[in-house]
Image (cartoon, rainbow, N blue to C red; front, side, top):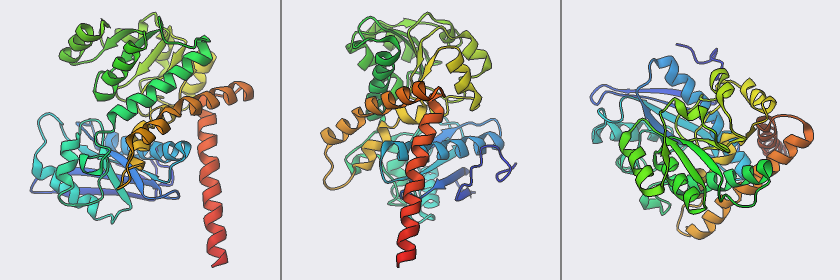
Length: 355
């Protein structure tokens, strides 16, 4: 088990391991960067194959949150937490209270929200032991999934506009991988806009719902990569864009909500060389963190969702710059995010010297 020598380690500020003997909690909290503010990031509960897998995931996800906040123009840093366990069988109120105590030990450096394997209800239980929880009903924003889906919808729309030269989604075929809260919400938005849906999910009930309510065509989990579609929308777990899957894709664009979609950085170039436009994951899926950043006494959902819709322009700008500079969209997204981080760090340094 390594941290400092892990390839995913990126000068993280904090990587903390928590264990509660009574509840069996095993959690890792990673704070990547707090230049822009306290680190906000979701809490993922997953039955990882090994501790190394959990460490790699939390390191990659927390770094992505730093870049996500920077690119979205909000004043929050990047962090993430993972709970090692089966989200269907290992959850107890006591476990999430123990997790809340772990979060509280960071004193506000890290703020937790929901993610894959956790729900708003879970985080409300954790809230009993810490005030450093966001994205729950008490904070007005509630479940951030609808905002994430809304942002992905607008980013996907930008991809279709840029690559397919279409101003409408009517008749556009989208292959959606994953029908969780975000994936299904995206499907509803796409269907209402006239898109045709091909869907895949390991849970039969979710697939049947999409077929019945949205007129989707169902395919096997692995077959989703082979579909004749215009857009592939990965909305499940990460690292699904790799040598094997990219070779199989027949789409013009990739635009989905999953975090860390590229198995390795080089896969962004592989997509570009194949003529597939890639919407960088942390650019297109920032809707959840954007709406959470609006939480507070003056929370205005309509205003927050308008900012989420601006993901369309953010993605379009990335696409145009990448095409003009003949580099990958992932490189441009990183460049824009780092430009803001460097500028804020410089400003903070100037203020420190002045004082």
